[in-house]
Image (cartoon, rainbow, N blue to C red):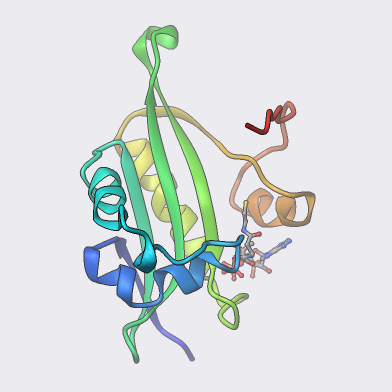
Length: 147
Ligand SMILES: CC(C)(COP(=O)(O)OP(=O)(O)OC[C@H]1O[C@@H](n2cnc3c(N)ncnc32)[C@H](O)[C@@H]1OP(=O)(O)O)[C@@H](O)C(=O)NCCC(=O)NCCS
């Protein structure tokens, strides 16, 4: 059985399977070859409204899952907060063992601690069942403008 730990991201994870994990979601490119690499990493890690959770596999200590929670402060709803979940991915070969579920549960817990009144996310039809099992309900539509 594969055991893993769910925790906040740290800088070493960028060299340890984080991007390989994200590539199960979309084309990542390789930030290791980006000249603005440290600027991008520092901007993300330095923003307290940007919460990245990873799953670390306990035998080889590599990253096998990740998701990001963005906290939005609103004027409406009495100055309430909304959690936005983004970039959810389980590393190829590690699906179906509870990694995605543990990470999303952690982000739900974090959103409650930060007094968010709701969590929203966009997803493909093929993963609706995954989120429904975690308590999410399908609502509204997503609009997009490519720039
Ligand atoms: C979707 C994804 C994150 C699921 O992660 P995972 O680690 O494989 O899922 P888990 O093992 O934690 O599954 C939790 C539960 O959801 C179910 N589940 C997983 N993927 C599912 C899917 N696509 N549709 C319906 N149910 C699904 C599992 O069977 C499991 O059910 P159980 O609790 O009854 O046993 C993962 O498959 C992935 O990274 N896919 C590619 C990237 C992607 O599509 N990300 C989502 C972007 S919004």
